Length: 297
Length: 186
Image 1 (tube, rainbow over the protein chains, first blue to last red):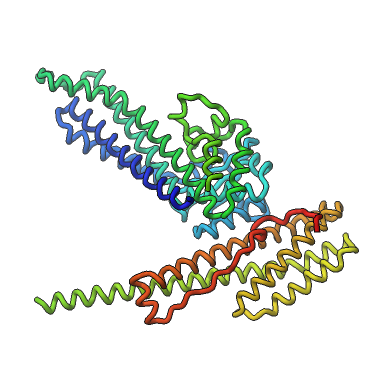
Image 2: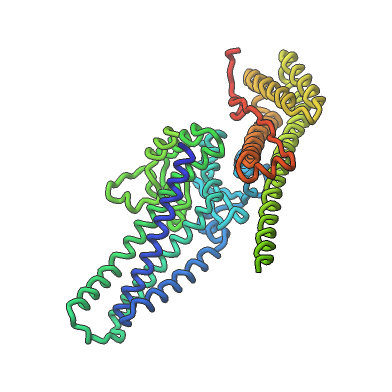
């Protein structure tokens, strides 16, 4: 059951990523067609912008994320023995190097991981989390974070974020160009041309929305995968289940930066809220669903 | 022309053979390494035990038999030869169990429980107990990977020629994975 779920999640991730690249290409084509009557050059320009964005974001250091979330690094086991030892255990069994360990001073229980590869990873836990979790639960939570690290989820997350950022840049650019006139040649009055123009405009309006929804879907998926990975490491679903149960009643976080919401083990902002429509924009699946899947393992 | 093709094919075959052999060696080294990981933790626990005993002794005069058992098992474990892994694990499991009893019994002495020294020892010992459990898990998964390579084609051919043999798994007692829990039932 466990391994099938990991395989299924990996397939879905590939699909979502392919969708993302298609979306970038499509919107590039639409813009190219509208402004230069050349879809191909639009695709090329969009591709270049997306790649540059990705390179910049992926190069962004752990420091930035940790500063954004007001995290303080600890350097030895004596500062937070249980956390340090649990992270050590998880790193050992996941066969990745010991990540850097940070503590976020926030009463709301939460944890997150960052870093683009296992060699440069960092994990953080809030003081609230350390207070309410016992060792078994902490293992579940840190196992989840180490799985993000081991699965290269953070890099993937960053790429998805960069791609949707690139899409919004493209769209903004198109908007400005539109309003300030640009150099439009309106010779093409055939019905097909009009349809293509309307289609392109619709695409430019809808693409950022689609990108956001896809990004969130990707993020939700990776959460299930990390939950499964945590059980693979600890061989003990109960720890994570009871940890997630405890997270259900949590207050929203104060220290969390909204841009890094996708990295946390549970959504730092709308933890307990359930708005039926807003699910599409959730970074995390509902805790109940995650608990249910864990119970099925 | 035919010669060139024959040479190219030979070179490719040799490269595949070398890669398979190296893969097997690497896995065997990993397995050995993860065994030594367990050994390191066992040693660390051994080193912590005298501290634990002297700390507990001061508070509880009545648990002499449990403390004696811990000391005796520690000595026994240190005397098991390195090659006898099964025996080593067996004694280690018994020691884990006795330590758990000791922790449970210590719950009866509030002064002891409150002492900073004892709490530090508790964390250190829980840590080693967990590390022992996790390094066994790691050992088992490396052994499983080696085992799979030894049995599956084409690496099984190379394994046979160079006499790679499967290593023994360590049975993990489920209770040794969790933190010592309090129980007055026994």
